Length: 117
Length: 453
Image 1 (cartoon, rainbow over the protein chains, first blue to last red):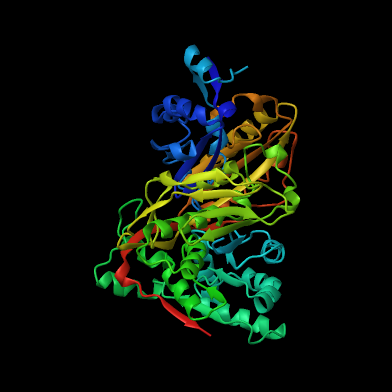
Image 2: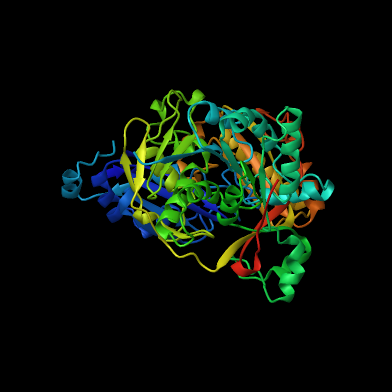
């Protein structure tokens, strides 16, 4: 089943120098496992391929039902150096939520995931 | 019921809502008002101001904020803690005292001034003693840009603020204190937490992280359910109700707009997060993976379970140095085929820059309305946009080249693609870039001082 990340999570992003961070938070506690399983470091790196210059790091926060991604080389140098409109990475959050996941049907049904329309 | 100490967040950055400090002290009971003014590059702006005028170099907005909360401080005992001192906390204190005097409240304020974070006058001494201040990003020693350094400040923790409160200050003004220490310090002072009470100190730091961006934890900039966040026009800024055991409640004044919920607080917790296992501060290393949140009623979130670990023996140093020039300008193209026209304008402009022999360290073109923020992820919806803003910026060490670039944009209005407007701002300004150089230094090198007067 195709699942839109924006249907199962919310997010906020910010910056540290040239790195953007995106915190992705499950909309239901039981959907955290889906995030952990499918929104992998590799999947996120592929999503932002050509948009960021560096790699991706992922941290898990099961206590907050959240994942934290660090996107390196995301901000054209960051802060004052950057020429980008989004020099402080404020809307990388919704850029990540554009992701669509392929979740096996049984797993999607068990977690009661909404299908992308 | 055990005692609760209320710390209200009144400014999330220099430029935040001028109404917020007064609303925080008038909207209900609070013990402390915490005002955060400093971002990474703010110190360099303040240092430039001080170079021009030795009585400047602090966040001037703070004087107005103090004026707006003066009755609460003078008559009701609310205490204020702010890192508004920038690179000149003494001058900031003098300006606040002068304001209080002219408001007929001379003698009402006992201002604690924290200094010692400013390392700029000590740089050569530090180099001589073997402190290289290598960049945490590139590993290069600071000596490589020494002649371009304009500010260097150590991030300092809660200890000098606690000292100022213990000496009876009702206003504490610091330079480059960490944002989070401004909230943790009054809790530590009130509850007598020791310098090695790691879990409690970590809890205070996390309370600080939650409210350091003002309303960003109480409904502002909240993506979840954003349409239905009530009455943002009257948004309530956050309040921490701290307890001696390190647990706390995040809330806001009754009757204000916005929302405090597990969701709004969680969004703020992940904001600007690095490795959640080790959030390093001068006082303690906090572990964000231990935070537990619980709905505790309308606009109340209880926070508990927080663990901390011993602080490191280093302080982070915020260094600002001159790093070339930049300029960016824009034009707006209208339907039909707005994006295609903007893209043609971009090709034309870049060819002209090439013909002039102008090469830049960086040229960046963006198409606002089509792809500026999400790039290719935005798909092709921008092809049908009713208008598109074409934005182009350049960066280079040579000011003259950047200056020449700024003259190439507006001519496109008459000698480029059609249906163009939005040029009222005129030629863009050349900006000198002040870049950020984070480094570490041994804690023992930095001696803070506290004076209460």
